[in-house]
Length: 230
Image 1 (cartoon, helix red, strand yellow):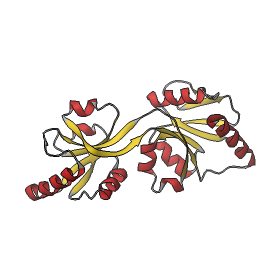
Image 2 (image 1 turned 90 degrees about the vertical axis):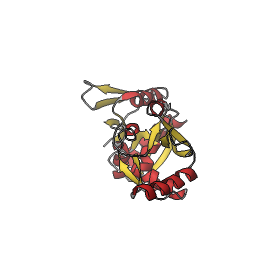
Image 3 (image 1 turned 45 degrees about the vertical axis):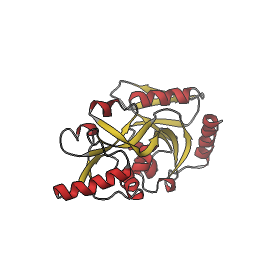
Image 4 (image 1 turned 180 degrees about the vertical axis):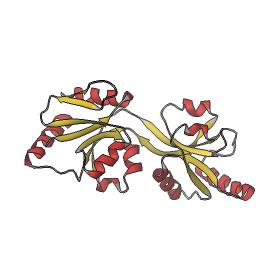
C-alpha cells in the first residue's frame, strides 16, 4: 500500500503545486501524454501521485480514497459538510488566491452592502412576484453567508460556468462567484458588494481523517509531512 497524494490534474494550480512540493525536495511530475492522468513522485518513497480535478479532491479526501490532497479552501468548505470532521488542514500554500464574492449590476446604484441587498430583494419580490435570483455553484457557502447576515427573499440558481454572464442573459439578478482580479466582473458590468466577501480562498494541503493506513504507511506519512512542513 502507498500513501496517495491527490493534486490538480491541470492548469496553473497543478504547476504551482508541483513547484511548492519541488521546493521542499519532493518532485512531482506527469507521466505520459496530457490526456493521461498518471504521475510520479521522486524524493520520498512510498507515495503515489493521483491526478484529479480540484473539485474531486475534497470528495476523495472525505471518502478516504486519498490520504493527502491539494485544492482550494473554497472547494473544501463547499463540498464537505462539517469539513473539519473529515479533513485536517496541514498548510496554506500561498497561491491560488481568489475571493468568493457577492456581486450585483453596476446599475444598482443604491445597492452597495448586504443590508442594501436585503432591502432590494424584498422590493424585487414585491415588484415581480418571485424571489431575486443569485447564480452560483457555491450553494452551501452562499446560503450560510446570507443566513448569517440576515438576507432573505432570494433564491439560489445553479451555474456551473460563465456565472458572470447570467445577469446579462436575464437568468439571474446577482451572482456569488470566485474572482481573483475583478476583470470579469468589470467586463460584465457587475460590482462586488463592499461587505460581500463570502470566503477568501487559497490552495491548501489537506489530510484525510478517514483514509486507512498501516504502521508502514504512518511512518511514510509522518516523514513526508515533516519534510513538507519543516
